[in-house]
Length: 208
Image 1 (tube, rainbow, N blue to C red):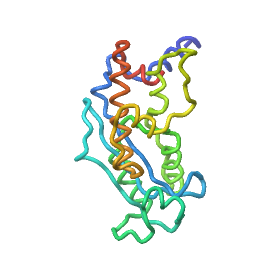
Image 2: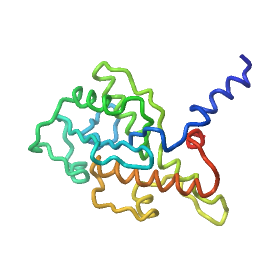
Image 3: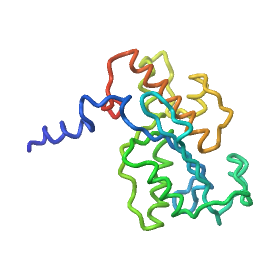
Image 4: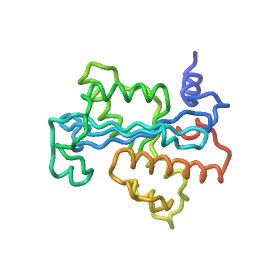
């Protein structure tokens, strides 16, 4: 196989006929005790199924994880208290629930590398292999919708709040895992709609 053919194969991850609509996406968000991959822990995983342009709220996952680690400063943001009065599964049980829900779906998140790395670290701690699912990042996808012009100042990083403001999405449940996953899912649909206004796109286009 020539080098050219190798790169050509890598270029398209999916069959050319695979549409965005028929693909099963899982939109996820994690609430964590902080941003340190080694020492911080996941407090909650929120995930929604998105397929055929429909966000399946009734078929969602919201799992709060049993905690030893607690950080008062981040608790002020996500509101998950140490003495939260619900029964919480262990990290391993929560991961097993999440993996069953995820299957082989394409992952969507905002700043995906953070959520996926936190989940992979948890999987590693529990002797499980890391995620191999294809993944998309709404922070990166949003940039594809922007006009390239020296008159228009583009930011290096766009927050979920930026996207919610841009697309007029309610931030009522912001900073809950499921709430942020829902905002991300709506933002993804709005991004795809804007991209389709410019040109005909398929699933592979989102990964380029």
